[in-house]
Length: 128
Image 1 (cartoon, one colour):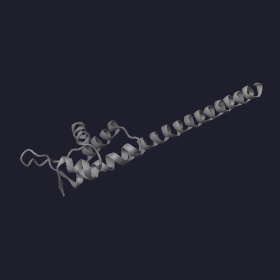
Image 2: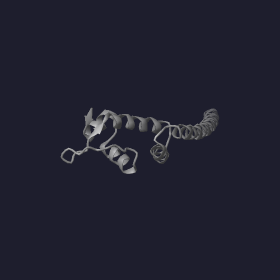
Image 3: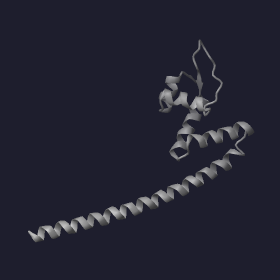
Image 4: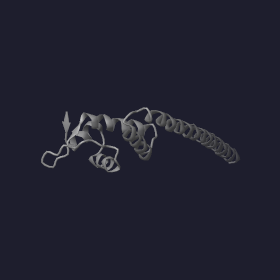
């Protein structure tokens, strides 16, 4: 199919502004057929935007995606892209594990402070 930017935005669930931003960054490099100055998008763009969305959910930054995109353009194959993507995902796994650890510690701290306050309230009630 061929889509105008509004249709593409709706189909993928992002704003037109986001699509334009990705184009400026060079994340969306498709041959834009200009029909009366209209940019036209294809199913490739739909797939590309969904892929970007997926990588974003996994925690990759736009800069990291751009790095992958440039690798792909340089070599025109995923042979160099995929190992780099695995490295990036490993780094994000490690960062996520660290955040989970920090959140666990925070949860324990909140819990123990809450207990402390509950004890104080009981003591105050008993003192009345």
